Image (cartoon, rainbow, N blue to C red; front, side, top):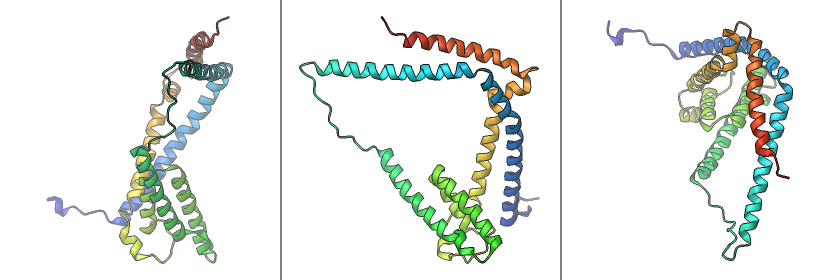
Length: 238
C-alpha cells in the first residue's frame, strides 16, 4: 500500500489525541510527585540543621569575597596611574533582542486577552468559566513563558481550540501559525517535566534503595564535608 493510501489524521482527531496525551502526562506527573515530594521533604527534615548551616556559610563566603574585591579596588585607587572606570554601559545585542521580544509578547498578550476576556461572556456562564481558565493560562505564559510559547498559545486561541464559542476575527486567524502548535509544545514540556522527575537522583533512590531513608547518611556525609570546606574558606585570621 502506497503512503498516499494511508488515511490522514484530521485536525480535530489530532487535537483530541494531543489533549489525551496531555491528560495522561499530567496524571503520570501527579503520580510521581505524590510519591517523590513527601520523600524529599522527609530528607530535608532529617538534615535541616546541616542545610541551615550550609546556607549561612555560603552567604558569609559570598559576603567575604565581595569585601575582598572592594578592598582590592580601594588599594588600586591609591595607585598613581589609576583611572576611574567610565559609567557608560554598552547595550548588548542580547538585551536589544530581549527588548524586541518583550514588545512582541506584550502585543500578542493584549490581542489574545481582548479576544477571550471573561467579561465578553457575562451572559454565558459556561463560556465565562472557559474564558477564565484560558485567560489564567494566558497570564501564566505571558509572565513566565517564552515568546515562542506565547505565540503558540495565541495561535491555539485564535484557532478555536479553547472550546469558547465566540466570533473569530478572520484577519487575526490568518496571521497565526498552526493552531495545534501550543498543544504540541505543551506535550513536549510535560514530557520533559516527567523525564526530569523520573531521572532525578532522589527518585532513583526512592525506587531502588531497599530502605530509601538510609540515603540520609549519604546526605549527611556530603554536607559535613561541604560545611568543613566552607568553614575553612570563611575563617578569618586573628
